Length: 103
Length: 394
Image (cartoon, rainbow over all chains, first blue to last red; front, top):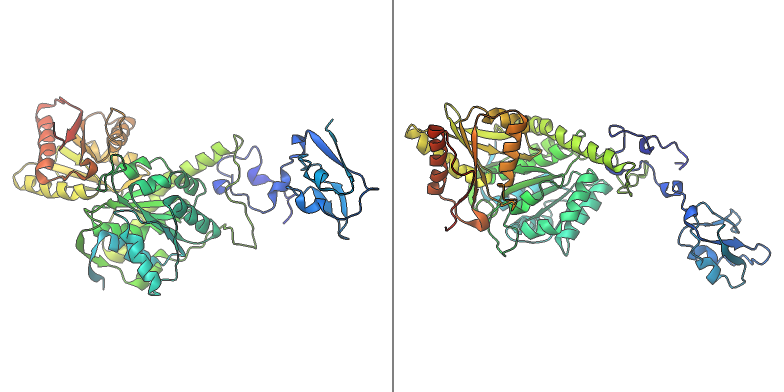
């Protein structure tokens, strides 16, 4: 089920009669709807020309903000959810991730 | 044909659980409720139930395991007393707010301290605002019957709340009584299958349970939960009516005893109501009329019905086996008097007796003190002391 489904039962103006019981959210994977990217003070920048696609960055991301495509190659960061922790920056053996102040 | 048996209150509750055959029982032993999971684990070992029995390391874990099991889509039950219930504290609120109809056998015991294993109601009374339905039982038969009805009440779609069935530790939990059991197949048919609308293990319709709930939605959830508690009263009556059809044993929101023509009434919970009824009969034989009102459903509190029933009396003594330490009477007293005031019942004079704390024995002559005081108030119309202690050494 898609997370883009309309959030009728948990919308900000839902009344107590229509709201879901016990705070249940009636589909899974809904954390995606909560954009945490604006928590970021530091921002990782993917330097595609330096990247060797070793994928060491992918498993260390505490969120799932390093996106991997169907061919198994990492692509751009998911900046909607990346909180700028910098773990991927530290782990990259090729200095292919820059870390700059969020503007 | 009902089955005649002689069982202790704990055994009766355990047998009810055996007949219900829940998916999960998670429990930790604590006096005087220990026997409930102990008997039940024997049923598990003997293959008499299909239940997954989880011998957890604490009551906090017992309730947590029940919450997980019930959220997953199973029927979960547990039993505890006193500090065990206190250790479940934060989980009690999680269970009720998550709308999980877990059933808990609460064998009432004094909540420490001072350290004490005997009966009063300080444990369950402390949990009265936790969002659990509370049903009180006078004797072993009622403990058994209330357990059989608990799932059906809690699981009703208009309710979906956890249920606590209370009985007096040792006084009924360890007293062997003759009682009527319902046949296994009839219990199975009465209790029915648990088919929750939403549950975690339903891969066709995945859900998230227990998410962060800020000021944007939390109030609406609490209001909805409060509505569920309001709805519970009607469901308790419906389930009790169905149970009466099955067994011939009728239960309401409360029991009123020797009310005919009485001007005085004593309100009292659980086993002491039995003693009070005995004394009421003796008084009746002497031409002195004192009624006994024994609340069965304490949460939700049947405000309208109790206020209406009590309106006809001139003097009412409300007995509390728990001290609220609010310097203004016990919990039953505060609820009853607030019901009377809210429903504009200003006629009866009301007094409170805190009694039997820490398992202090309550004998018929103690009850006579209360009866005599209410009769005196009927005669004089005067209350010299609202807040009283019964059976304490002065």
